[in-house]
Image (cartoon, rainbow, N blue to C red; front, side, top):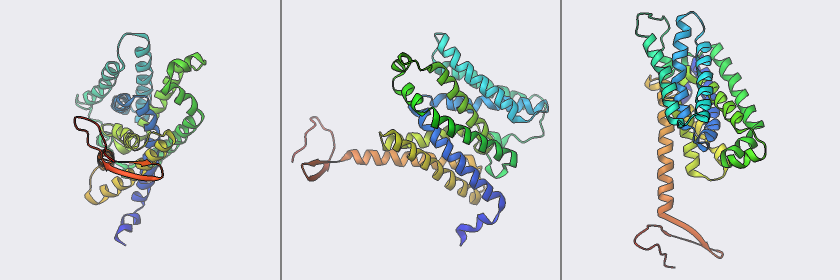
Length: 295
C-alpha cells in the first residue's frame, strides 16, 4: 500500500514516533496554557530559547544547555517581574522573549558563522531528530505528565479561583513559576522538531479547538491531546510527500482543525436543538430584533 511507503524508512518511523509524543504532550499542556490565559508566554518562550541555543553553540556547548538556561531564566523573570512591579505580563513577555530571539539573530549575522544550520530550530525538522534529541523529548514528556498528574488539583484551583486558592494555603506564586518552567522545558525539547517560530501554535491550537467543542475540563484534556496527536501525525506524513519542514505542516493542520471547530460551533448555533419533555425539537437559531422561537 502506498500509504505505508514512508514507513519503510527508519528516519520517518522515528519522526512519526517523535511527532506523536510531542503532539500529545503539547495538546495536553496546551489546555492549562489556554485556561490560564498564558498563550502569549508560550509564544514568547519559544522565541526566547533561540538566543540561548545559538550563543551556547558558538562557545562550543550543546545548544540545549544555552536554550535551557535562557528559557528557564526567562520564565522566572517574567513571573517575578509581573508579580513585583506594575507592568502587565504581555509587556514583560514581549521585552524579555523578543530580546532572546534578537540575540540569536544578531549572533548569526556578526561574522561568527556557526557550522550548525539553525534553520531546523526556526522552522522544525523532525526527520533530523537524533538519539539525544529523542531522549530529551522522552524525559521532558514523562516529567510533564507526572507534573500535570500530581499538580492537577492545585493547577485547577489556581486557574479558576486564585484568591480562594491563596486562602486555602496554596502557594500560587510557586505554582506559577513551576508551571512556567515546565512549559519552558517542553518548548526547549520540541524546538528542534517543530521550530521556535511555530511551536506556540502547536501548543495552543489543539487546546483552543477543544475549548470550542466542550466546556468540560476532562473532555477538553482528552480532546486536546487527541487533536495534538492527529495533527502531528498527518502534518508529519504530509511533510514527507511535499518535502516541507515538518513544523510548518503540523501547525497548518492544527490551524485547519481550529478553523473546522469554529465552523462547527457556528453551524451548531445556527441550528439550535433542545427538548420539550421527551420530544427533541430543532430549529434555526438566528438572532434578529427579538429572540423568539415559535413552537
